[in-house]
Image (cartoon, rainbow, N blue to C red):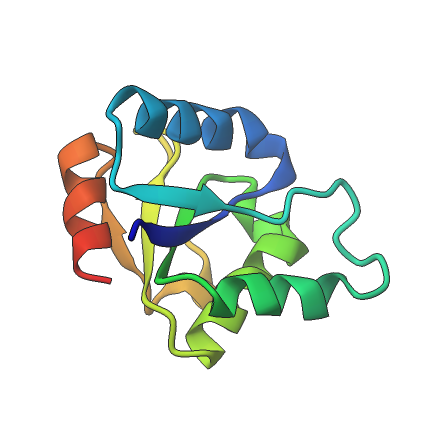
Length: 124
């Protein structure tokens, strides 16, 4: 059975999420990605539905960029995963960006390589 991994990202970084999903398809990965992509994350029931999806996953990969500090939905997803005890790894969306976000200090940060992502997911 494939591992299920929730992708957390700022809406402005949707292209990076798409790139990660496509990378998994090209590599014929042993896991599948899930996310709660919505333009307005605070519609009714969003948090309830999102929490349910996160709880169904083996882990979370958070794509971190300079947009993350303003992404209330993404920050909530990461806190939710932490509250639920779901393993969470952060990958930097851009090599030249190392955002300092207090809420993310506890995250394990890995480099965005396919080997690093596979290794992290295998440990979930």
